[in-house]
Length: 222
Image: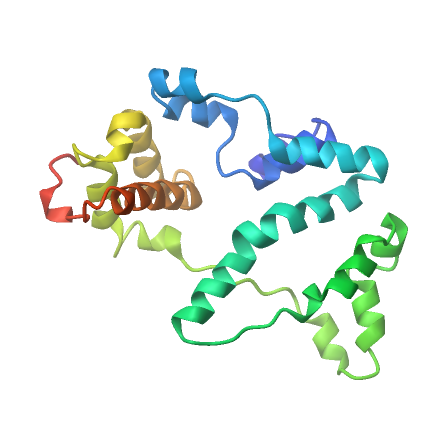
């Protein structure tokens, strides 16, 4: 609720960008070491910029959908589907991404999209062919309990990776801030599961790029 209310009075473009980010500017300023922060800090927000351009031409709802197609789908959802399916030699199709259907949907106005409730067009299109309970079922995500795992089975992996003396995070990020995030998460004071997961993946990715296999037993700091 706090995260949702924080950007409530920002312009639509910045508000949308805030909702997509795992870490806002205040966290990043604390997390990045001064030399890294001063060198890499960029005020340009590509998501907010593209959102603003489209919103000025059409509207906020249409802009959110368009930016989702530009970033959220190819950079997140479709990537996950592709990697998971290829892992098990499955050919997955996304019928709602047929180019003609996407083109048609992109041309819908805000009133056409929202009047009558969410996904009205889908409900009306398939109402004759599907039972009513299909349309009344609540949304179901695919989230895994990564937050609980960081307190139990993956606790040592997370700490060994982020606090090792030779870690990428130790050289570029503020260890005290990471330690605070880990401690707050383990003590249930704040849910940092997604932020910690991102930091862990950053560390493991960097090691893979450097061809230095991760060896938890070599970690010296806790």
